[in-house]
Length: 332
Image (cartoon, rainbow, N blue to C red):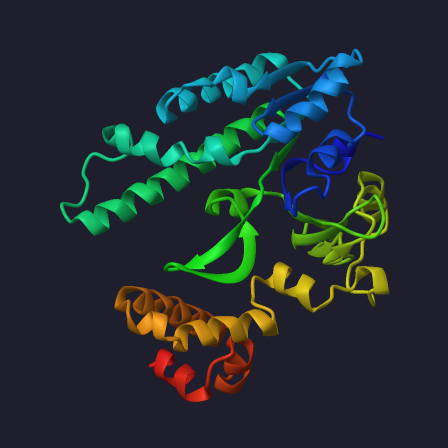
């Protein structure tokens, strides 16, 4: 049974260096003869080159590092749009885009260069206009993603990680190097993490669901995967589709540790919270009010979000590593 009989749509794969993202993409079980591979990563090219040297032939293979060499952002954007348009004719079972980030970074410049294609009027205020341009670029990327899904049943888009930065201060937490549309429009998101075995741990940032029709005709959503999958292989994912985790008690292998929970929930670990707190209180911030204001704004947004989820000031203070009085200040 093909994996596309179980999983359709876009799967975002991110994670640590050398955690096997490209290998994971290539081992779905779908024949390479039905796969379009778009490579835009130096390390990936060596993996795929070895496969091709052994006689493996993809339905279509693009090496963007080579094919887009010397191109500016808008030229690369148009080139990639042609690749996407070609998918209609090729009708592949699988599209692997490894990595998606460089192409994704061309959407905003494309909007800026073609503003009248997206809006008939723009704000005269620079700050508002900039926000409008970013919003249009997000909506444009979402449209392109939807267009790709129309041509390919399963799409695997990979990204690397980047350090989260508040102002000029690094928080110590890594986040996927992608923008909102990829996080929002995907069917499933996996963060691959190195383990003590050749198979990686999979932290599930966005869980797929299946629907069960109850006796009264209503629908019940059932979680397919736990928040932690080990070993993270397509065979294991297939097994979960046949044995969805639902609300059952998790096994030890399915239970994330503190660091893994921080990855999944987008929060800082205790050590990272303490580091950020010290940075906020440090002399370096006193010398740069702009950075201090950025940190305060971000903390205010996080406090407001947690408060909207029904958490109390002491709970919020514990999660963010700040005082209850600071929480109350940010809530007002």
